[in-house]
Structures are given as C-alpha cells and as structure tokens.
Length: 114
Image 1 (cartoon, one colour):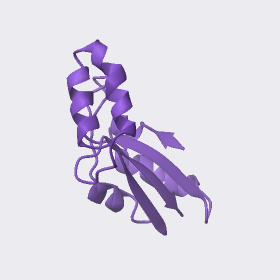
Image 2 (cartoon, rainbow, N blue to C red):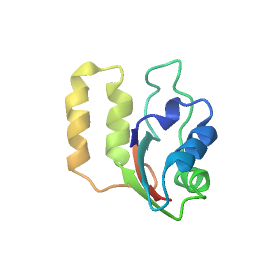
Image 3 (cartoon, rainbow, N blue to C red):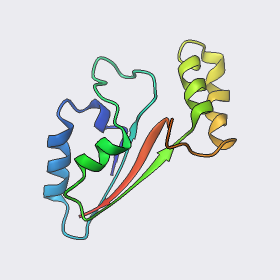
Image 4 (cartoon, one colour):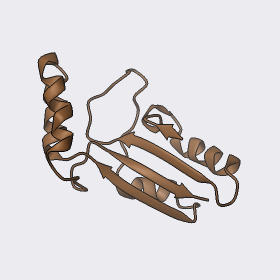
C-alpha cells in the first residue's frame, strides 16, 4: 500500500520497479497519488501523474485498474482553499456532491496485480 507517496519520489520509475520486484506473483499494489492539486510538503513534491503515465509506469503488472478521485468542483475548491483556510472544510465536502471525473480529477486510486 502506497498512499500519496509517488509524487514525492524523485525517481518514481525506480520506486515502481522495486514494488514489482518485492510483490509476489498474484500480489497486489494499491497506490494513490495526486493529479490536479496544490504543491504540498514542498520542496519534495516532484510530480503529477496522468492516467496514461500511470498505465505506462505499471505496464509490467498483469492487471491495472485506475480510478479517478474527485472532480472539477473539488479541484477548484482545493486550489482556492490552499490560501483561504476557512474554505478547507467546504472543499472536502465537495467530494460527496459530484461524480468522479477522468478529465479533471484531484488524484488517482490504483490497483495493480503482478
């Protein structure tokens, strides 16, 4: 399980290779990562991954499922609330009032089987 880590790894390809190496055949990698989201925990916030990039990074796995997290309204609220703390709670609530968006997600949830 790797949640909100990949965007902080300077060499994400090497991290995924190591995950593949240590996972047994039929084993599962579950990860989440940010996409349209403010820079956080700087200066070590290096990357944002598209769905296509994640597919390519995980190409050695036998099965990969990529689920978008969030939607346009959530992205807008996340970006605005970064500098306006009073908006952070409403920003979190937007997660529950709209469908997920592949075009403009806040991030991704990934399940990959070796």
